[in-house]
View 1 (cartoon, protein in one colour):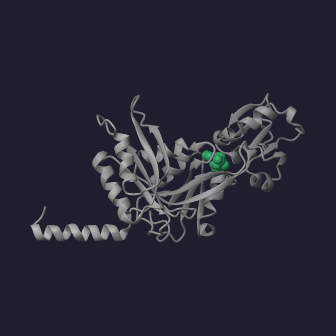
View 2: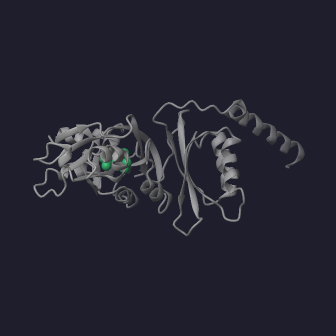
View 3: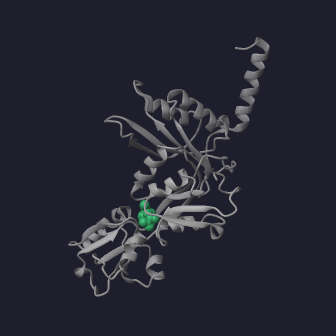
Amino acid sequence: MSDVTELDARPTYAFLGPAGTFTEAALLQVPGAANADFLPCSSVNAALTKVREGKATAAMVPIENSVEGGVSATLDAIANGTKLQIVREALVPITFVLTVRPGITELSQIRSISTHSHAWAQCRYWAEMNTPNAEFIPASSTAAAAMGLLDADVTYDAAISSPLVAQQNSLNVLQTGVEDNTGAVTRFVLVSLPGTVPPVTGSDKTTLVIPLPEDHPGALMDILDQFASRGVNLTRIESRPTGEGLGNYFFSVDAEGHIHESRMSDALMGLHRITPDIRFLGSYPAAEQLSPNYGRHNSEEAYREARAWVDGLRGITGGL
Ligand SMILES: O=C(O)C(=O)C[C@]1(C(=O)O)C=C[C@@H](O)C=C1
């Protein structure tokens, strides 16, 4: 069930549905997706639950947007509960269109707009400038909002969605490119139950959940030093409340490198000594080519030589 790439002849992938979401676009990037069953779900959490219950091989979930930042629902759901593992990532360029129900022909007629809260956050200023009287109606996804316009009993005037869902369902597009920032990208991750870690490619990421230890002044500095002193670059770091009272936080971190590389495994050991409840969420190939610049002293060769040197000393002295 967990070895997404090898074991399942016909995998089942859970995702935020219905068809036409950006999450589905991310799933379509997975090799072999054409021979998989897609299981649409009403939320990120519902998709992850399908994996935890063994009803899906893996779930595709958004984790980070270049405008809005981390997707809290995903960060929290994978940090807690039954352990899960990220096996790959996918990047989807984001652009939005405004579709309208029959009878609406001008922006000034729009009194309500439905979409996913993350999409709304990316189009907020456009909406303020162009449809100042429009109320935001939250939807479970952009595609769900757009498809709602086909319903005879639709209660809102417009929806914000991907251009594809509008085109595939012949919806009335009143305005294209309604996003506040052009060139936005959302990063998605494919999550399964823990299994084999994908092999090292030299261009990998490792995702971690690092709880802040109590009664440890300078804990964040000590945590960051585990990465810095081994030349491990961080590509994302966010703090999230644990939900267990004010002042209790964990850090959600993406780092360049793979657990099978010595500088990363050494950093993980250092982190475990500081905060034993650390959660490893996987090492997987980066969607874009990374060229980690960690220095000769953090290379595999340097670690190998150093290990051999210490082993030699231990042999001579009878153990240090
Ligand atoms: O509603 C969708 O289409 C989704 O796939 C969800 C989602 C998100 O959660 O960020 C994905 C990408 C966009 O940034 C907006 C919405």
